[in-house]
Image (cartoon, rainbow, N blue to C red; front, side, top):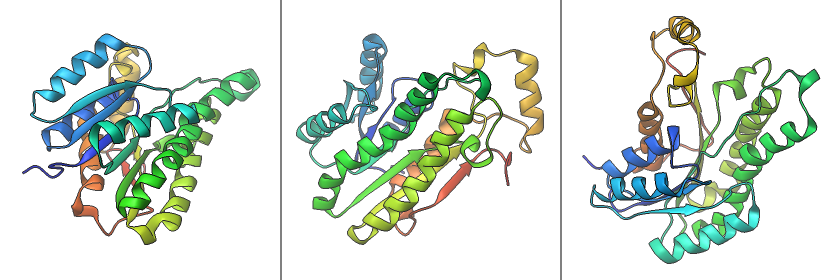
Length: 248
């Protein structure tokens, strides 16, 4: 059953990791997919082709979600190429981990810009389109770290906690126009980034999770399908934790 048949979705940071997983699952469910990428043109072209094979329209856009003008241009271009914008997934994110005593102001600012300001940029840029349509689902990617904090990640935790507060405010502001805003907070998700970590450390993390495994990009994507589809039409302002029971 294709739960997103004919819907148009934008996914920021869509060319790798969780973003790529979301794009693939959305295409399987019949959504047309616009995704952004930072620099890898080849990876974007490959993903475009892979998604198109599902019989949907797919297009990659080189765009920096941390830049408001680029977000405005992106929404304009996607509107012209796809028509209606039904779902926006704010997934772009970076980490620059360090203890506060060693963290530079630049590393703090950059993580806030890319992770949190990007959500403001994209929401503000798409707001007019969705208000006109009187419909839309905005899905913002937070983290288990935004809920419980983490030593050495004060910048990342602040950005991800900020996303939750921003999203709850948008749910209140935009709800009367049938625009829903929800948050997904992933736990330990295994991607190409985690493959580079020490196997012993990763096994320790898996062992500490009640379901005894790390999550997959598909686990996150399935939650996004639910929030993007009509199955969740009465759900807004919520944080869905997809973490295998790591935090209950």
